[in-house]
Structures are given as C-alpha cells and as structure tokens.
Length: 223
Ligand code: C5P
Image (tube, rainbow, N blue to C red; front, side, top):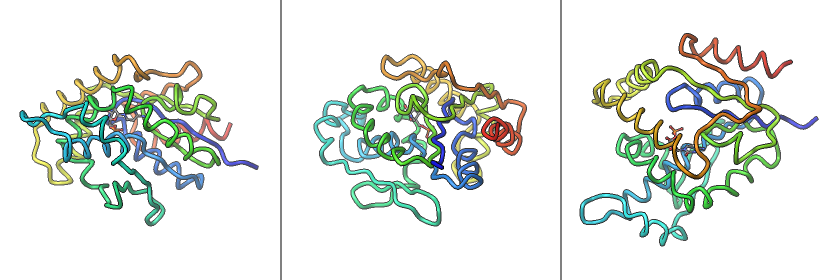
C-alpha cells in the first residue's frame, strides 16, 4: 500500500504551507515546501550576486549555480533548508528575500536547476508538496491535486499578522503591494506560471480558517 503523493498549489499567503504541514502530520507524510528552494537561491543571490546598484545580477547567479548546494534536513519531523551546510530556514523568510524571490523564480534556468531535485524528493511517495507548479509541471501524476486561493485583501491581512508576530515591522499596505506584485509575476511568467492544473480541486478559503480548509481537503482525500 503505497503512500500518496499530494500536490498543493496556489497563491501566496493562502496558508498553503502550514495547511500542508498539518495534513502531513495527520496522514504521516513528509511535507516539502518548494517555495523554500526558490527562497534559498534568492538568499544565495543576495549574498553573492549583487551588482553595483545592489540588485541581483542574474547572469552572475547563473554562473554560480555550481556553488549552490541545497539540502532539506529533517529536524523534529520538519524539513529545514540548508545552503552549503548552513541552516538558512530563518533567513529565507526575511522580507528582502520575499521582495526578490519572484524575479529569481521566473528564470527558466532556475526552474530547470530545481526540477529534478523536487521530483527526486517525491519519488518514493508519501509526500505532500506545496508550491506554484507542482500539479502542472513537477508532479503531473500526483494522486491528489489542490489549488488554493483567497482574496488578496484577506491574504495580505494574514501575512501581515504573521510578520507582526515574528517581529517584522511592515505596514499592511506594503504587504499587500508585495503580494500583488508576486501574484502578477508568478501568474504571468513564461515558464511554469502559477495556474490551476485542469484536474486540481479548487479551494477558495477566503471565508475558511485553517482547520476548515484542512477538513475540506481531507474530505476529498478520504473519498
Ligand atoms: O511559497 P512561497 O511564498 O514561500 O514562495 C516564494 C516564491 O517562490 C513565490 O512567490 C514564487 O515566485 C516562487 N515559487 C515558484 N514555484 C514554486 C514555489 C515557489 O515559483 N513551486
């Protein structure tokens, strides 16, 4: 009896990751947050590939791919991201990373660099993988696919609260703008744009809390 492969895609701040984490616990699966990988590469670029105006030089990033070794290491049942042996799980959540990640993630070279890495993680089954293109590109044969969305206002509210809790000083408007910008870049990019797979189940959780969203997803899985 092989454990399932579940693909969860959707917009930023729909609660995708924390919902996936909880479902992983309930169903005894490994949760893989693929956004962390794009964030990891962005973090590397911010540390190593800035030009004179302190912006990421994409060419220099491509030239340094062979210096990037990403790894997920299990710690207390949760995968944490390591870059060249250093735990960067905290750093990749910083706003400077959020501000640049979509520009990095839209590069075909970056997506190609991460493709096999992600597929290998799901090879043995028993995973719930969340991202933007999991059901469409990375794991088109997943056993279950969900696409999560919510209104941008509600998502900005959630992300703002989350950032406040972790002590980041940022206004609701700034969070909203960052979200809208990322939505736009993610949905309009040429390679693997954010979109619902034809066979994914659409979940709009604007009016649902986390527990209700989880219950709804589980009701589809136990069918
Ligand atoms: O999920 P999270 O918000 O951490 O993802 C950060 C960014 O990484 C997204 O805005 C998107 O640009 C990129 N991403 C992606 N494909 C994925 C996961 C994330 O392009 N599968």
